[in-house]
Image: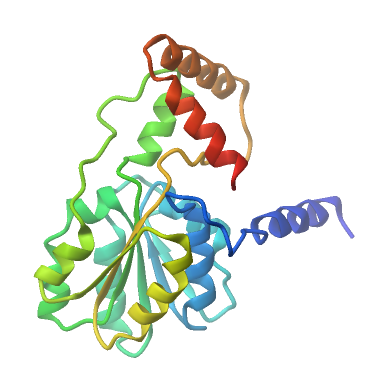
Length: 242
């Protein structure tokens, strides 16, 4: 058995060890993706927004030869997941289609929820709602900058969906996540599941460079000097409770 396979097996085992009984709030995005994978149909079509939803999809969706994953994997075109889900559902009307949307992505093309209603498409939209442009935020930190312009003032996306005549549910408690997803997936029509996720969750790259370590250290120093040391405490707490 090759060392590469053993390394993969160890990594896979670590990823699959997401605690289903986690009570951490805001909810770990890993738990959202793992729960989604467990509850989706065997031939589901997933679409993933660029940034963090792509990472969670790549790491936690279990593909079986029948499932499909669509995304914008070669370039950073924001808000791709929901339009791709619309196209997939029109093409495959009898298959379950799930959009793994970031809050920035869903806000950018929110009007397409009306398209989903108009066409009566049963697309399920799971929103990783961390009130943050997550990938941009972590890239700025890794470069040694204090993040600027990455915070989002979001509405309650479930309320927005219901105002448009769609099924909408907001999930803030980890214990309610699986039940909320199951109910939304059983709903005969489109559904929006707005999940409040942890904004300080670290998205670790496959390999960490020395430059990234230096940049992250500079960011931590700047955060303390600028009175934002509580962000570091929240980061440590989130990582410890993963």
